[in-house]
Length: 189
Image (cartoon, rainbow, N blue to C red; front, side, top):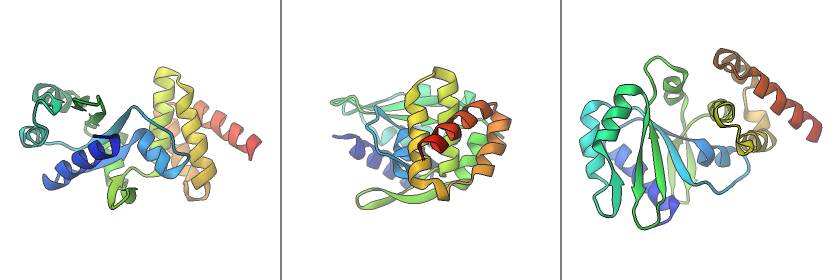
């Protein structure tokens, strides 16, 4: 199984169970910008407690590893848990938004895009992907997030609502990161 197959399996499970989701992270930034290989698939998911067992049953052992206990903990704390394909180690990170947060609002802004060759899936808006990438950069300092944002602005720049990004960047405390990225984009054209 390859990463797109795991993405398909996760999306199919979420849609069959009518669980709201949005693809985020590097898979989403590649859809709006320059493609790059990523280690995992990041999915923002609006789970309810009754969703955990049915979802986990869609990923039977030993082909997959998923912990219902970790899923329950993620739901209680607004954290994340994983679905791992055993033979390849490919991983889907399922992130639960905390109630009333900007992350939760991303689900209401999501849109359908053709990420898989034959299927549209829900993906976070490019502005929300940029905001996430800026937060990831702030947390870990990895330059790959800045490259992803720059690629998105070069490829989808006219589509991106910069005022929305600026307003949320101020609320999330990443305005300096946004200004630095815009400076690089403006210099490189």
